[in-house]
Length: 140
Figure 1 (cartoon, one colour):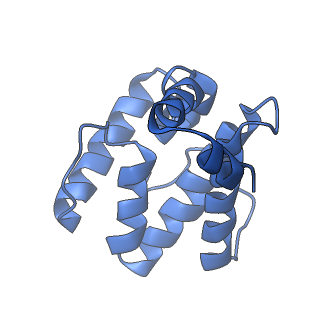
Figure 2 (cartoon, rainbow, N blue to C red):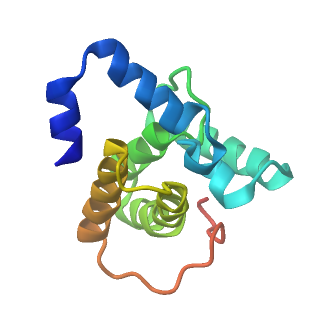
């Protein structure tokens, strides 16, 4: 439980600093999951536009984060019809979280366990995973 130990030993500013260093200042671990699927090209913009429309349709209010942020994509999984939720979880979030995990070059960062746990939880909810082609969903 590296995160639990870190939480017990650290103050608020240390937690925030590690979060920023881990996710916000590192493209390999960015929480904008569309980046891991599409990079910095037109397909990501199209993906974000589709997500934004879906968020609106589902009544999910956007935060200051981009539409492809993990928080928005998890809200889609929570509120969408089961087939759409499954598609997002297995064809968008799972492969992107796998890429995020590849960006942790050390197991010492306590946030690595959080990302692994999130992916494991989604795999528990949606266990029927077939081979995934990153970014190849009609509901990306």
